[in-house]
Every structure is written in structure tokens, then in C-alpha cells.
Image (cartoon, rainbow, N blue to C red):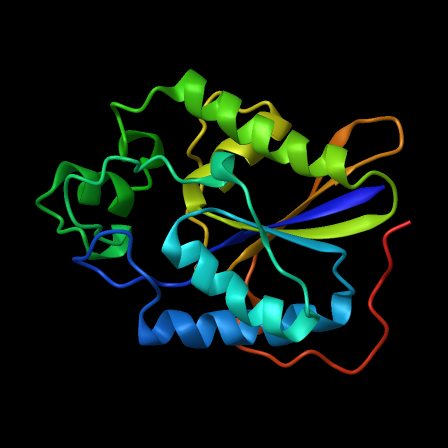
Length: 205
């Protein structure tokens, strides 16, 4: 069995192109790395966007691994004609902000090519799974849209944006020996409020 940890990046800066992490996002990334360090990760993958790469950096330092940049993990917002605004900072007067506030996540990006985005998300995760067969635990630092879409596909949901992942949240999926993909957890954020007890972490077998 191989387990993927789908990790949303930390809180980014607003108002800049391809933003890195905000000061709060840096703290989130450090807490995430400290929480996951005991889990004996076998590999790291990361989106090419700066906010994801900076989220992965503390994990790289703690594990001694270098994250593999996978272009298919990039978010839906590939149009860089405008500075990036974190979703939570979009005003209620903006239709996208209203959609987010009302839980209509599928309306946040109504013009998205859903089929192409779903295909890319699935291709990204299959690439990682195929590279690490049998008894592996792999961290994948990406984005809320990618996580939403892939988990919706695993669950067979008609709506691809169906929940709002927390910054540096972890969602786990497992490929079983027969090839079936199963969802193990969604939106883990315990690292933001707790310290991990010193105990053995379950191994992936």
C-alpha cells in the first residue's frame, strides 16, 4: 500500500505575482514540517508555484530530501495577468467571494475547463503513485483546487470543488495492493493547534 499526503500550501502573500508565503504562512509550514517529520516520508513532490515550494522547504530541511517539482500539480490559476489574491481576501461584493462565503465552491471558478483540470489532477497523482509502488508514504505539496478535484474523483462526486481545505491541511489517500484508491482522511489540521506526542507513527505496509 502506498499513501499520499495531499498538502495545501500555507497562507500566501496577496497582491503579487506567483506569491511566496506570508509570515503566517511561514509559521504554518514550519508547524507542518515538525508534525510530519516523525512519519518517515519516502519522497516529496511539489507544485512549481512559489507558495507551494516555500511550504515544502521546511520539510526538505527536516528530512534531508529534495522535493521533485511536478508541473501537473500547479493550481487552476495559471493566468498570471493579474496579481494573486488569496481566496479569503476576496471581497463579498465579488461573485467569487460570495460563492466561497456561501459554500458554493464549484462557482468560485465557473469558467474553468473542468474536464482538463480533473484529467491533470488525476494524472499528477497517478504519476506519484506509479513512481512509489508498495509500502511508501509520499508528501505532495499542492493546492486547494487540485486536492478538491482529486478527492472528488476518488469519491465519485459530481462536484469537483466540494470543500475548503485549510492552509497546510493534510488529506490522505491510499493505493491498495489491488490498485484501488481509497480516501483515508480529509483536511487534517491538528498540527496548527497541537504538538505530536512522542510515539511510534503507524507504518505503511
